Image (cartoon, rainbow, N blue to C red; front, side, top):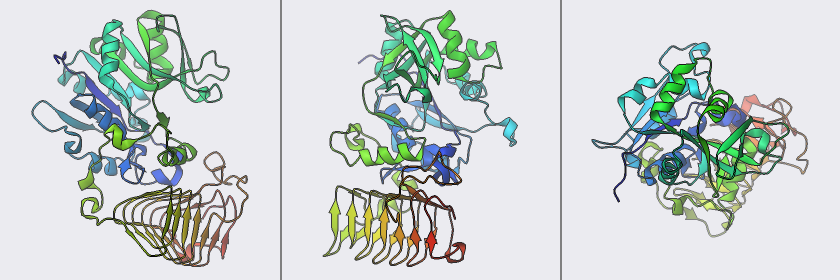
Length: 421
């Protein structure tokens, strides 16, 4: 196939992601593990690779070290070679908060030199924190066919959710004629996915026009819609913004549901096996004589002697005899000792639960977390990296146990619903 020159890809991976709470305490949101084997950014990087695009700039900002280590040379996604490459683009103005990117457009504006050093007819802008499968080359062809200045990937969402997104009103030709950013009273159910194709010259001219225009959804798109040719590119596949604990948990659970539409293996999603702790060297999972596993994803290196139901276990997780893990997500090398019970929880790496402890006790899911009521309100309990839960401790619903909490960090034998330690 005789393809026109590749577009340049800019992947925005600098968001704080604070609604993911302790999961982003020491890492950027796109670097949060997902589905046992992957990190969130693997989906965007793999989509770029599978679309045949070869030049990527990754704009980082917040706690980027694990993300940079994970991306490495880009070899895992075939981004190494004379005409291909992935470049990490950290903020280069300073270290104060005021020097950070003020918005998505400001982030791209601060990396104009990268755009100018890598000439291409179009620039594709992506977010690094969505779970989806998409052919960007098809979107690029659509953009060229429409002779658009800007093309925005859009999908239908329920009207109850549209307040979280930019929303576009289109005409019969898919041209966007009006725009509402996070509307309280929406006139449409078409939501922006945060994926844009810009003509490169148009983008450079737009960014040069007004330095106060710092965000694509708030400033750049409304102006472009009023003055130029902006089209919606309809998308019909699986796509999820996993920016909240609830959405993150649901997307992981979708992996376990036949027919949910998410399939990383079929989608050809790759990860950097070498960057993850001993991932390439892990032995196959082992199961004891009394192990019971139902509807779960069990990664290499796991040892299961107890019961695992409807859960996602990353490499190296140990579930001892008589222990139970249900409706939960456990990151690498967590240990659940004999007789312990874990129900509706997310564990960061290397959490250790002592024998007989109970995580997710009781059935009262409706007392939200007192400190973070908008983060935890459906019963999910979060346990931070390398926390130790003493044997016999009872932890309720919507609780937060911070990273590195050890035996002396607990007030007593129980953590009540909605409390944090």
